[in-house]
Image (cartoon, rainbow, N blue to C red):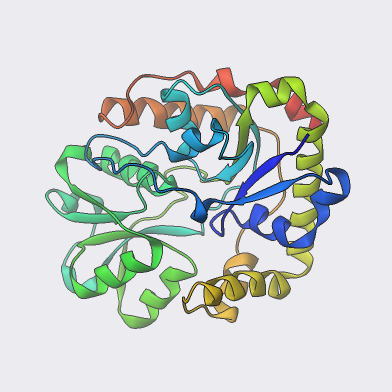
Length: 306
């Protein structure tokens, strides 16, 4: 059986695993699917919905069987009736990014964002971070103007004044820090643990648990390699960016990787509590079509396997 693994640079672990050949030792027929080459999903209204591309691709013949993402996509999948299962989570990535504004804007807290344009990579962990930040000061999604931007484009838009605030992520955030003085409106650590996570379809777990175990083992080995070889790992990202015509700095990528927690861990009750609270808040703000039970996607034996 061929196992299709979706990857892209934003999930550092799977992206490096794609380059190391570790998984192929256990699964010679593994197929790597570059998510950037899949058809673009239909546009969604950033005010009223979350994009569902991760769950859609997970359940199509042209998509993939296993994926690693940030905090929000599995919630979108569950709310769109996708029968997914969590495979594991990373440690907290609270240093990975934060909600910022320029010092010149006069914006000093999330409470100042009413009616403001805030840039996020909509559908990623950034949507959850922004909504949690707003909720903490008594604001909701309809109180701001969310703008869907990519990581680098968001930084440029903040500098040009096209955005009033932005959820920035390293290494792209480093360029903006070098260009102007920033104010941190909300850090990540005070809101949620922000792990990477991996998930798949329940039928794959039921029908091919050995393949699932092989993926978990390979991820653990690749993450150990990243920890031991951060500069060599950073070069994979720089080379990929250059191949796509984008600038990338090796030192910045190495620093970003050194600051992130690697290693795959079992899904915890604390993580599930965070997921459930986020899902409830997303639904209450009109971004999910239905309420979800995140614990339906957690299998105890997978925790033991991790």
